[in-house]
Length: 213
Image 1 (spheres, helix red, strand yellow):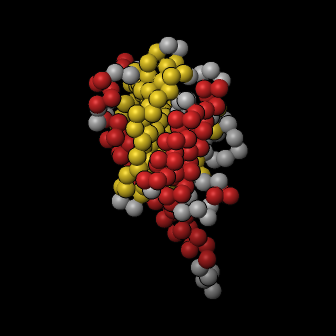
Image 2 (cartoon, helix red, strand yellow):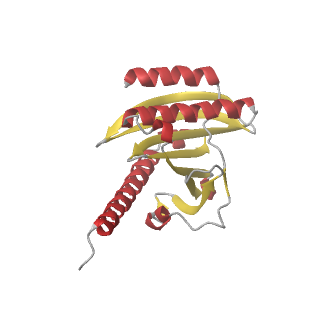
Image 3 (cartoon, helix red, strand yellow):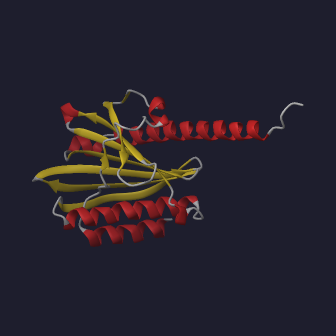
């Protein structure tokens, strides 16, 4: 795993970019994802600010927490593992998805959206049965110094990603709130996904029972 992180870092430094993902469109014509009902209205200094579906044909969506007063945002992404990757194991999915996020950074830099991208930390951590990848970086956007953290994991065929963005200062860099936010959010998402899986399995069992005669 440490070798994979080093390879990922080499890939990151070669890009000189900043972590972004494709924007999702307004989903006002669609019902809210079931996951939204399980979300807390606030986590730490962040308040819930709504959801949006991805632009593509997947069932992926994102929801946002924010602290406008301190110019902090936390975007949370929930999306299915691509069919061609369903045979990969958990660690491969986490690392592959993290590399894809970093690749999206390169696209953003080429488009001129960001500059002065610098990775200041990258690691993986075992959290129970899950592996969580964590990347922190700094960059400039419209000449404003920014600090970002990306957390990524996978559970039962669903990829989960969190990106926090805020002004780059010592207070934000040293805060333990971001790791706490990611832990709370991932635990909430996994618990809800597990509940949905159990409910779906129960529904299938009921349908398979023979009818009374």
